[in-house]
Image (cartoon, rainbow, N blue to C red; front, side, top):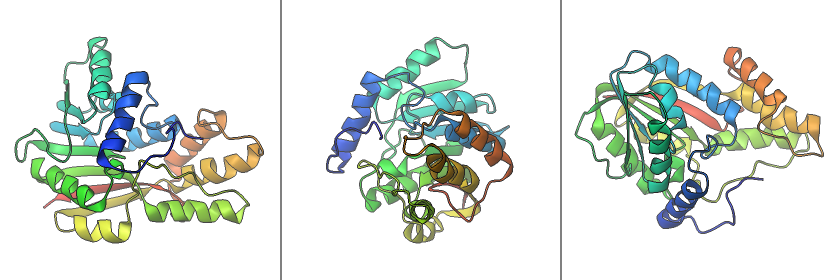
Length: 264
């Protein structure tokens, strides 16, 4: 069971209120934006390989900055932005306690980014678009990201997709498991609409799925511990992360998808 609370109508205000409340109650919790910490570490490791040696980076939808601190180790400068004032407050609190000097955190809405045209070499967005309530706003966000990216710059987009969820659910049902919980505040990307749209602004360098990790943690782990609920922080998920570093695909059984895009 998620900590998403009681389901509400998915509107821009309700989703933003959800993150403001989360930022107020758990401002520095590293799991605030994703409970599956081992997947997050796997994701961070993959992104760090791509951004190593880059200049100016924007981590938009950064939450309380947990991932931003990791990325700062590989780049000259990184700006962490989020539309939640409480999450940014938590990020700044963590920054004050650290010795990192190449990070700046600010309140920033992806629909109207407070940055100049072509300001960044890389933009990172992890589970950013799915927290916008409709496809029109998701497209607006993509256009804004394209605007602040330099020509030839990279947009590393990690999102949960409708097709990915369907694939994971297919395997779960094959073994008698219920389908994955769907979060009320998320609009999962429809790849059949998303890919043609991004092709207007970006060339696709790579589409990376995390099928081995997702199959082990979303199908095998529940089968091993049932009827108990699986835990995200477990020895099993740690082993799955280690395996997922070497074997990355399992017939696309991954609701988390990384799109590495290069701005035209």
